[in-house]
Length: 277
Image (tube, rainbow, N blue to C red):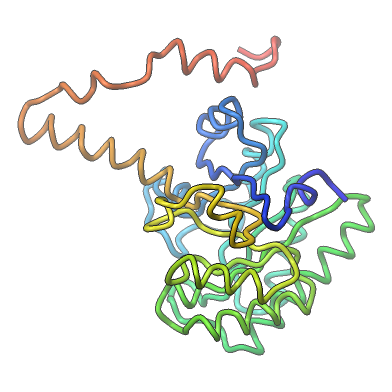
């Protein structure tokens, strides 16, 4: 059992800090993160493309490898729907993720680039294929890979809480290690999800859930709190607000609220070996 898997304890959640480049990864690690995640939306923003199906498998895997190399922390990658509709597309993605040194990944049940969910049986078959190849490759390589199965249809308004739970229970039964239904209606619904499952549950800290404390997540049984694109969007809000002040009002004062460069330098230096510039 690897250290990343051991972090997942129901009722004692850790924060999976989603980064979008080496700089944000190293700052989060220096600030105390125990594990990192990629964010397809945040990385997409940094590449100048919108969220939802605009990143290729090769680009996403290369980005995941870069995140692995940025710090010593385990990294779980947001690999969207596995970059293909067939189970064999997902298994290829899992193998490439393991080749990149990732500690785990998320696979969702949405037919990207659209927000339509896969049919129930197809969604389960895709996760079953992913779980099987992850187990086989882990045994062959002597490593451990944590597969998170996402039911995104509730967040996207495509199905209700009961159907999300039914999918998560089916994903659990076919071998997913962590279960994840982003943005249920409220904390009561999140608690219902946790009680319905035996394996660890990931909760997304976004929208109204940013008002919830770690202790409150713990009290309903959450094992992992991911940031998704929340931190990236907070950063982009600053860019947007500073830009509007400058370009619309000739006001540069918001730029004066930035972090001192020496502080950032000190955080980044922890992860640069002496032989590198």
